[in-house]
Amino acid sequence: EGMKALGVLLLFLGWRRWFDGPVDGVVYAATVAAGFAFVENILYFGQAVAESAAGGDGGEAVAVVFVLRAVMSPFAHVLFTAAVGLALGWAARRSAGAWAGAFVVGLAVAVGLHALWNGAATLGTAASFLSLYV
Image (cartoon, rainbow, N blue to C red; front, side):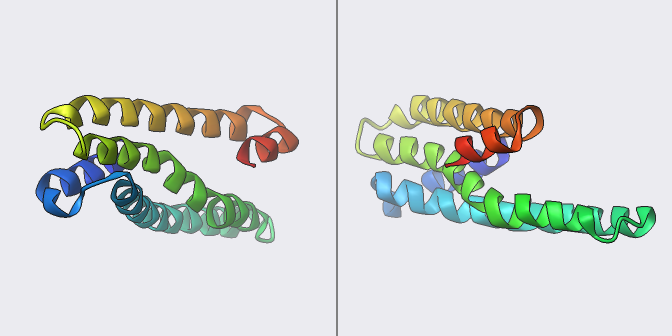
């Protein structure tokens, strides 16, 4: 989450002129998060293919990774990082230094949401994970 948030912060600080509200923040954050998810998915797919080939599971690991990463995860990454974009977008309409506090709050929300997502995926049942997702 920190790297995605840093990407949004760099956009905010570097192109402040075009980052002037919450909608801009969400759009820029979604773009950063989608790019991050795309790259991360390639890494996970490659790992799943290698494990399936070595273990001979008939591609079961690839199917699981596909559902979790390609179907569900892109929306999750966008949601998490949108918290940072929304906070920075809100700060864009406030005082000049408001971005620092807003960034910390947005990052804390993003990290909390991601922790909830990871916890549900690893500790919960399939039903609890799906209900959390919805």
